[in-house]
Structure formats: structure tokens, C-alpha cells
Image 1 (cartoon, rainbow, N blue to C red):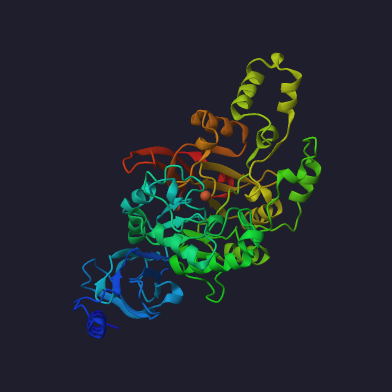
Image 2 (tube, helix red, strand yellow):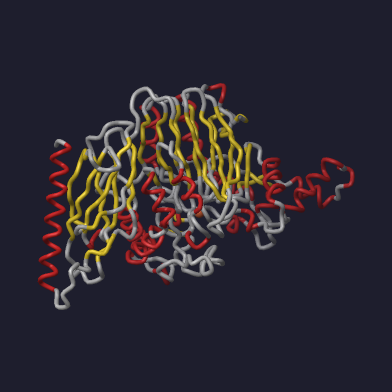
Length: 566
Ligand SMILES: [Fe+2]
């Protein structure tokens, strides 16, 4: 269709919608209103996502008045190559209906690669805000720039991080690694300052039903900073646990009690439906809304494989509590046996096979895994993990062992002799065989592997090594948009000392930052990939400053699989 034809068609739709408004008014206008109040507005902004070389998803939600009588609404859309919409490239219309919570999503095809487009919607004569999006490059590519973020808990603070990302003008895609929403009630996790910040969530209860999940997405999407991000940059997202409930696995969650909250399967079904309604995501198989693992190719430079380590194949997390005797002794042998079970799954067999095929197929310089939980080995001395000693006391002990080892007591020597064990069994550390499988594939294929990780609310950058000590790749772990990090777990400790201490006691860890909220900018070129961490000084106020973090990089090639300073 020629641009001029699309423009005429949009105007025709506009006219038809206006006519519909007029007749509706005529049928119902007892009070002589001139505008049908059933067409309210676009309260949740616009969004785009899952760009490919020739297509992108565009999204909006129309906001009819409450009295819709279950009717559908015709929504018209336009995509243009200019912000003034003088060059309409594509247009069409579709129905917004109650069974999709009045969200509309269009996979706009036939676009040119590496091109900026603008889009908008028309709902009963009301025009949406204009969104900007960009398709992926193809062929030879010199640079890919991603903004990477995770863990945006609405009551915990303002989305200053989203506002900052929305200001960036050279980002190819925004990558959200999950915890886009949180499921807790209005006075739940990290909500201490929510009332004074006017950030109390809706509904007030923990979200369990479809109506609950929809309402929660709606309150998040009313946030103007999040709307700004969505309107500016295409999003590539995966869920983590809080899009369902804390510490989800394939058929349950830590924060789900079937006795009082019903079967987990019903909650999962509700959460999945709301996610797919509200997020600008393209399902690889429209008949399976629980399958979101998918790849994005940025020409010959980057293949970004978005993974689901949370829901589709994850076996239940192990718990240290199950390996403690009544006297408090830790059964390390049984724990190691269970954790090393060769069939234990994090992604599931099907997704693992798919990832192996994707890695095999792609000849891009960089293979980037966009995924939820830390992949690097994060072993911490057992007395710390098991809460037998404070972090400060332990680092003091380490200092004493270095400076004056002869003064150590027998009890102190015993503490220092304890082995290091994984600090987080919800991460890849709790799924050792699954991690070795991915590492083995990357090594056998000689790929330049980079893992992106979220989930922890702190910054981590680590070298990835397999069980035999082979260098496999690197990991860039991003802090949160708002969710609190170690600064709230160790409020009395100096964050710089916490980060320094962790870097000292965790072998593969190169960089930790445990105080600030922020995001990463990951820039890939044929000669290196670097991650730059950027922080905001606070999320408790709309007034903040930017705080520069470290920048680290990795070079391509089998002999360069480690983090380097810039
Ligand atoms: Fe989180």
C-alpha cells in the first residue's frame, strides 16, 4: 500500500469512528452531551517491542469509560517514517475488547532494517501519544547499544532510572530482565515510603486473579517515566518471578500458598494472560503463552538470546534449611549430591536444546544471553551464608588473618576454615549441571558468550568459568530500577566495604556495587563489548543526580574470555 493510500485510509477510519461517536451520542444523549464519554483516553501510553529487521510490535491500551456493555472498540493505527506523520508507511485497524483488557497489539511487518519509525493510535477520534521505535540492523553491523534494566518495584521509589534511559538517543533496544511488576499488597515488600511518595499500588491486596494482575500492570503503566521509556525505545523483555510470585518455579512459588490462594496453575494462567496483554512481546508460538524464550539478531554482530530461567522448566529451588540437623550442623555431602544432580533443570530440556541450536546457528561475533538470575559462581563462606557471623565481623576476621594470623583463636580459625557455598540457590548456582551444559556448548562451539543478569538488586560483573576452570565468557549483572539492594540488608555496613569484601572473597567476581539503583549500557562492536553502569543518587525523590559506575569490557576470541578494565 502506498503511503498516500494509508493516510487516506486512516482519515476514513477517523471519519467512521467520529460517525460512530455521533450516533452513539444521538442514541444516548439525554443530557445533550456533545462527546460520547465512553471514549475516554489512552491512560497507559504506547509501547513498542520485539524489533526484528522487518517488523516490530506496537502496543497501546484504550481506556473506555466503565459503562462499555461488553462492546468492542475499533482502534486504528499508523506507522510513519516521520514524527509529523506526513509519510505514512503502514496503517490498519483492529478491535479492542474486554477479553484482552482493551489492550491492542500489532505486529507491523514489511519495515526496513535499522530504521526509526513513529506510531500512533486513534480511538473514537482520540489520538494517542506518538511512539518512536526502531527496527534491528541486518548484514554488517558496526555497533549495537542496549540499555539493560530489571526489578522495578513501584512502591519502592520513583522510576528515575526509566526516565534517564528515555533520555538516551542512541539506544538500539531496551532489555528488561524481569520483575517488571511485583505481586505484593500495598503495604508489602519495600513499601515503607510508598504513601508519602504517592506510590501505593492497586489493587491493595496481593495479586492472584486475572483482574488483580491487570490492575497491577495498569497502575505501573500510569507512571509517566515508564511511559516515556516505552514511547521512546523498543523493549525486549522477559519475566522473572514477580510477574507471578516470589521465587516461582515450574509449578509453584515461595510466595504462593495453595491452601489459601488456590491452585498455582490458576494463578500462573492469570499472570500469563495479563503479561501477554500488557507487554509489547511477540510470542514465538501464539498458541503457547508460557513460551517467551526467543532470539534477536543484530546483523553479524550480536545474537541476543532471551531466556526463561524462571517458569517453563525450572525445578524447585533447594533450601539450606532442609540440610541442617537439629543441632545446626550442615549436611554438606547430601547438599552437594542433590545440587549436582545431572538431570536437574533450570531452563528445561526443550529450551536448552533450542538454545544449543541457536548458538550453533548464529555466526554473530557476540552471543548474549538476556536472562534473569546470576550465572556466575557466587560462593560465599558458609558461616556468612548460614547467618552464623555478620559480614563486618567476617571481613574483620579476614583482615586479622592477613595482618596478625598468630593472634587468631581456635574458634576464629574454625570459622575461616569453613567452605564457600552458593549464597543464592535461586540462581544458576543452585542448578550446577544445567549451567555446565550451557558452558559446555559455548566452549565446544568457541562462542564469545556474555550473560546479562538481573534479579539481585545489586551490581555484579564476573568471569564465567566451568567446573574445570575453563574460561567460558563474562557476566554483566545489573542493579535494580527501584528495588532495594544490600544497603538495606546490611544497613549498618559501609557499602563500599561490602562491595570490596565481596570482590575479595568471591573468586570470579570482578566488580560489585551494592548501594545504588541504576542500569547498564552494553555496547558491542566487532572489537569489544563493554558494559557501563550508571546509577541514580536516589529513587525516593524526583530530584536526583547521576552517579557514574564502572565500565568493564571483554574482547572476542578464545584467549580473551575475561573482564578487562577500560
Ligand atoms: Fe527483583
